[in-house]
Image (cartoon, rainbow, N blue to C red; front, side, top):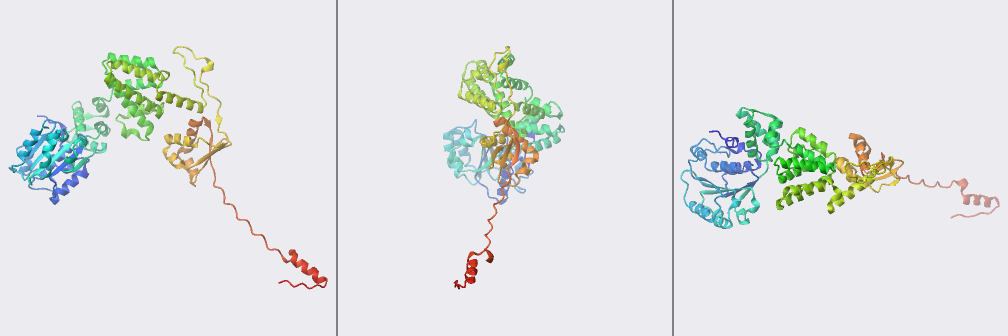
Length: 525
């Protein structure tokens, strides 16, 4: 019988567990030193190895020939636990056995010594599902179990466990597995199964799995069922990442304020039985990707998509400011919440798109603030916004957007320097950090920057940094300028000491000489 890959390739020793070395090494050290706790708590998101480590630990505490803290998987006890023949290791699903009676039965069983193994090990999965009464029934046994009993609790929602349970267990937190580690493990599995897995496809599977190796193996299993050569395109199709062109079309309609186009696309999707709440969720994810691109220098590791789709997203993100994306995300979140309460999801979706595509129709505080910010930016850039004209009518020439002649910064202290630095932060973060303690003034079409950093001039010349500063200045003020650096002023020289008067120029000496000629003797003390 065929076995799913995540079952077939489940690790049977700690060395094979991926991405949880901080936990597996500690457990191995405890086993080697024979310093075992009576109760363990494994917590973390799904598919990160909690149950796997619990089963390995259950074998290791009973193994007859422990090897560096790992079970040998060869002795009779290890093979019996793997096959289920040894009943001293009990796995309980707390989701379906969560009552007081179930825990009372477990407590009664702990009175019996193990039949074949050294310890009776109880693995309670999804332990947060136990009722309050069941937790209370477990407390005393969990705190002071018989010497031959070990408890291993596993949960994805540790915050739901009572503090009395947490204080009685040795806790281990399983982290999400890094995409590179998942991709490496998938390569090993693919080689063992005899099919070809491209590296980019492995990384895409890892990003879709969101840190869960079990989910990654399940997706790999689906892809292998379609082709022995697994490419990024195949992964994208199987994972449902393709067919998202309508999201780009809707986003373009929002950007262009094309209300009619957006409603037409909505009608097409509704006719094709597309769920409007699901569509709203997908669009939120789409704008989240645009937000990441605008806010992060290297967004590829934070976005789940193919390289070609990433290029599309990057191109579309150029037309948005971060503020506008955040406003749209807020509006879509409100629409999704309304759909869960409203009777007609299509109407809620249409209302949301009308608001987003017709800014003048939205009178919310957020919309008004967004419109004010856009007007301020237009004024700074020297562009006069055109008046709203119904679709199909020609704009009067007097209302068409006309760029003014290029302007220059007025001489004097640059009062908008703080705002320029904030704009530079979105364009060139390293340069923003370098200039954060600087000042600036305008003089003769130059923006003269004064900084305590003596190498500021060289930094501005490197890597097109000067152009980024000019761009930030233009975005904020609408003015063109050149960039200069204020040289540190030379320290003022100390005044020279006055020369002592020479004997010839000394008035007293001249007076004495004159008196001597007249025969008058003057004594000078």
